Image (cartoon, rainbow, N blue to C red; front, side, top):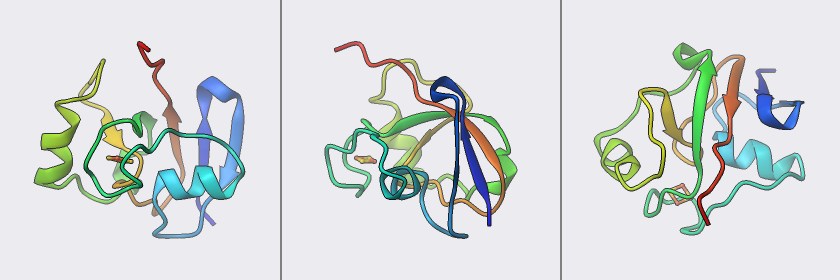
Length: 98
Ligand code: FES
């Protein structure tokens, strides 16, 4: 089963193949903001992928467009609700400015 290492929380969780980063985190009993409920209509689930981006589903045009609204976007940014996990990844959850 793929694993998600959440670097800033010093935690590793397991994730069912094909599940989104957001749902894997929520299922593990942890928090990740998701104001729109995971339908690519906000950007509060913004995460930064530090390793293993090749193990995530491809970024859609809609995700890319929505990411433009997030604070601190990098080339490694993803929306947790849209990125589906197919192998081990390491992520960081950026601090929110509010
Ligand atoms: S939860 Fe709103 S875009 Fe991911």
